[in-house]
Image (cartoon, rainbow, N blue to C red; front, side):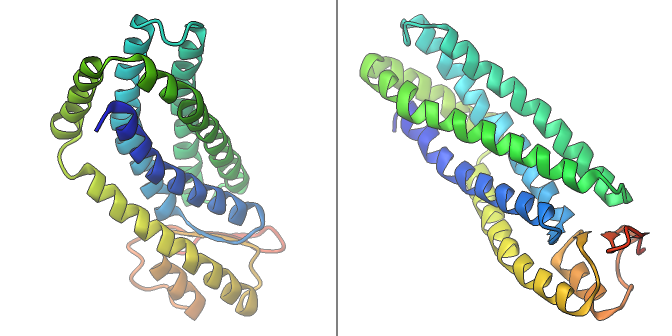
Length: 237
């Protein structure tokens, strides 16, 4: 496997995650159910898998391209690195919004949706530029020896920096998020059918079911944020 094949393979899982983030943002914008635990799991994926592993690999890869004179316009690599820095700022925004949702801030839902959309838009454009422009140039211009050298550094990151099994762990997390995304549609339908609620953010599917049934037991002191049609906020403990 060469460096671009490794990065492209990781893009597959990242793209799936971005699609889930888009769905959550849409659910928030249309006043549907969403789970704060899912957004926290997404943050975990973004920080550990993308920032500490994937982007770290790219930040090894890009300087090697510049050294080899690829591309001729070196400012394009500077733009890619700038987008990495910008993505980190968006992650901070998402994290802050989730915490505000959990304590019942009335406006944090829309802010969270906006932050998710900004991150998704940035990363999708970033990946498109890599796969359509930068990676083909790298495969054409980098020697086989140089590609092996770069890939060896990628393997070191996987095994020694983030740890073995990182891909399997986050692949399972991705499957869980996809499962929850499907069930959020049904939970929204049930809430709309039985409860006069426009927007609800709960920690998990388990807690959503408890609320729907009218119980408030076994919640581990976690707060739920609910906006009624009259913008009255309730916190369940």
